[in-house]
Image 1 (cartoon, one colour):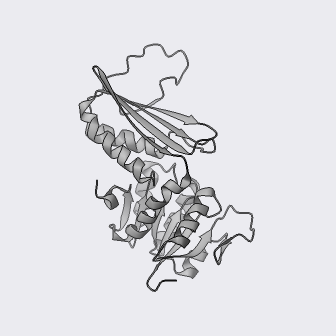
Image 2 (image 1 turned 30 degrees about the vertical axis):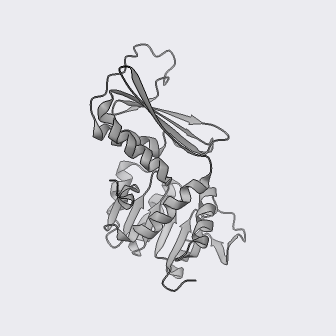
Image 3 (image 1 turned 90 degrees about the horizontal axis):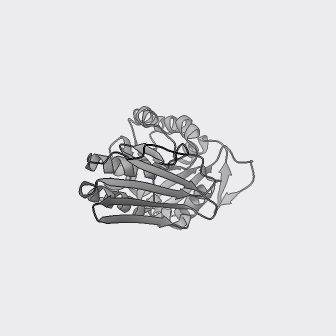
Length: 261
């Protein structure tokens, strides 16, 4: 352990993303993995370095974690985040499926620490959203197609929703959908602020998204691909190292830490 290193805990450590985060923290300089927790685990003797997997959230408190990374599910996050807030622990959340109400309610609990919710940890995906917002005022039609592995239980993805919100904030000049007859319900996707979003769930994929914008005589496509979960780790480490610099309460997205908000 490096003297003065940040003590990190991982919630949802038995899952694929949780395992990847534990590995990344162990390898990172100035970070120390002090606890790995997964209430949904089978109680196996799984180890992360010299840290044994626990089923109890109290393991974070006992280990004196400075930051906890949460990669569970929305229902678990709604129960666990207030407990971490009460202990004054900073939290980085990669869980999807939290509603706007959930974010507001949970954020109010973080009066002594910071909570950073990240729709997508891939820095390239954050830049994709940023570029799409910049381009939006110059186009009047747009659609978003997001592709994920077939184990993802929510749709559309948090990244797709965040992208549409950023685009609609940048421009409200989107043409109405000309479709009159939808022969199969849902064929035009789900609209958010006038921007259709289409969700694909397929074996062999991890996380991918393209934003297609069109105006008279031209189209612009901005696409980002994460074929491997390792692509998320630089963003996770950036969030872990930077969350304490954010104001107490709730922050959404990596933009502030990247300086592109």
